[in-house]
Length: 203
Image (spheres, rainbow, N blue to C red):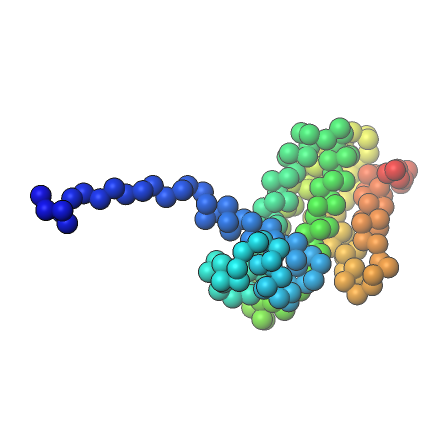
C-alpha cells in the first residue's frame, strides 16, 4: 500500500465543548444584559466571556438570535432551579423566595426583548408561550409547598403570582431608587398570608 493510501488516524473530537462554550456565552450575555440592557456592545459580552467577538458571531450571527437564546437559556435555568431549591432549602418558603429572586433577575435580563426582536410579534408570542408553559408549573409547585408549610389557603394561582411579579418589575429600568427585590418579597409575604390576610413579613 502506497504511503498516500495508508489509513489515517482520526482524532476523536472533545465531547461537550461546543455546548459548554455556548452556555458560557449565554451566561456572559445574560450578565451583561442585566446591567447594560440588550443593546450592550458585543465586545462587552465577548470580554465577559473571555473570547473574541468572532466567537460570539459564530454562535449567534444576529443580535435577535442572541437575545432569544439568552431568554430561552434563562427560562430553562429558572425551570430547573425550582425542584433543586425545593430539595436543598431549609423550608419551602425559603425555596419559593429564592426562586422568586431568581425569576426577578430573569425579568430584568429580559428587559428590551421586544425591541431586540425588531417587531417580530410571532417570535415574541412563541417565547411568551414557552415561558408560561415552563415556569408556571414550577412556580405552582413551589407555591403549593410554601402555602402548605404555613397552613395558608391559596389567595391566587401561580400564573397570577408571576404576572404580579412581572408588573412589579416594570418600574425597575427607569428608576434607580425603585427596589424591585424588596417589593417583590413583600408581595410574596402577602401571598403567603393566604386569604385570611395575616401577613407574614420575611426577615
